Length: 106
Image (cartoon, rainbow, N blue to C red; front, side):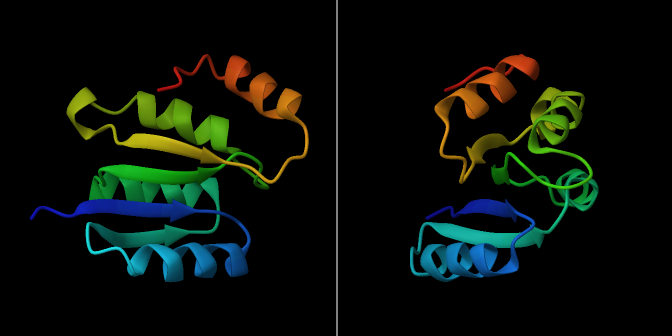
């Protein structure tokens, strides 16, 4: 069985640790790297070429939307699927971010 390679990107270390603990229990997934900020995430994604990125929307420095824009500038074959994460209580915040980034939701 081919495992899905993941990169987790979130500026909160406890949240990353929780996701890592949860996902590591699922044999179909392999966490290949973690990043605590957008710039590190972009470098890791370029190097590792994961299948999926779990990406926080709100981070200091480069936001999740800016990371998505950088990913979309990679060659098509190197672009991972992206799952955006947020703890925002407002759906409006997330929708506004998605629209600003002109992102496609699938």
